[in-house]
Amino acid sequence: MKTIYLDNNATTRTAPEVIQEMQPFFGEYYGNPSSMHSFGGYVQQKIALARERVGAGLGCLPEEVVFTSGGTEADNAAIFSAVQAQPDKKHLVTTRVEHPAVLSTMKYLEGKGYRITYLGVDQEGRLDMDEYIDSLQPETALVSVMYANNETGVIFPVPEMAAAARDRGILFHTDAVQAMGKISMSLNDLPVDYLVLSGHKIHGPKGVGALYVRKKSPFRPYIMGGHQERGRRAGTENTTGIIGLGKAMELAMTHLESGNKKMADLRDRLEQELLKSVPRSRVNGENVNRLPNTLNISFSYVEGEAILLLLDQDGICASSGSACTSGSLEPSHVLRAMGVPFTHVHGSIRFSLSRYTTDQEIDLVLDRLPRIIQRLRDMSPFSAGNEPVLPNKK
Image 1: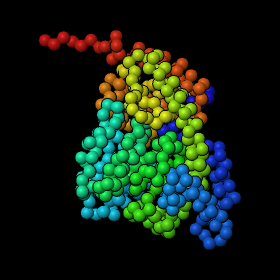
Image 2 (image 1 turned 90 degrees about the horizontal axis):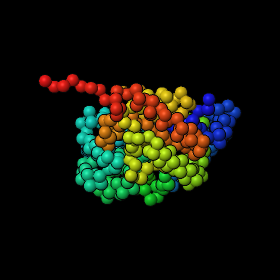
Image 3 (image 1 turned 135 degrees about the vertical axis):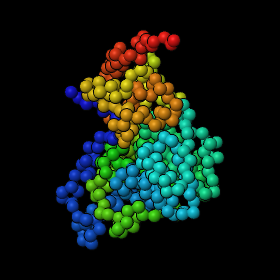
Image 4 (image 1 turned 45 degrees about the horizontal axis):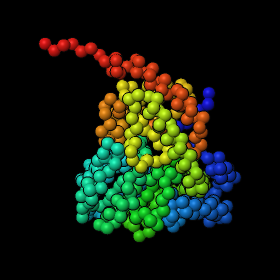
């Protein structure tokens, strides 16, 4: 049975071109890039090329790119760096719908005496700019707002928010892990101090990411030791991962326009036909600007985990939310923050497409999913027509 992979916000297939670029550095070219000899120097040249490719994709200088072990480390490094550089400022601003890599760090700092403002979202997943502006204070050390939400795909007004922070002399960090490769952005026009991306979200390898640190923005090393990454991130480089990330970034920029149009067309067809064929379904974040590949849809009176199990039996991979919180019985913190009705929040599914997704794969989902929902509703005691009979009050 062929696997139909529609969970690309969790991770993506590594592109064949990326694997080909990485392979010689697993065996033939194993030198340490910090070594003085030419064998290691060749590897260092390839790391430099990867840095140039990432810088070109971001629209920044290569030396503003710090390679990390992934998005979580980069998020942690940016936040801790900003607070350590400004020990007199004890206030931070973020949102209630951030990835755990940011929310957990904020909770940790809250336990250390920092005041955190958690911005809410409305029913469409939008931030309130007036609430945001009011939250900025002279003692605010950092604003940390994701570029696009990983569960709903809702895109936040990061350029405007970053500009408002800069006007007040406040540092700004954005987790762009989900937005990278799906939104055209250039750091020439984006006034952020720190930006984070991850290799495996853009058809690169796992275990590697990058942190952009704007020139002259303060930075304190998160991992200390050797002189690697200009002293900003110690430890022998993940050579193959970095080389793969560089190639993945180059491919992402090559496919940005055509890939996005293809994904948006397929996503929109999936969304519209599911809304027509499955009664009592709703799209979360339907009326706002979203990533072209993401559809978060809720079906009333069914359990998302049951839907995923039955989809899996047909070889269809989807998700009920963030991969980093899967396994938890708690409903999505993002959908709860949006006020999604209780009858729908547990029956929410995220489909996330990639440039490799085909028409035939979407056709199969449209054939199977309505029947799965109907089957589960027929078994649900809470579905319309199956409501439990409660005893009369005396």
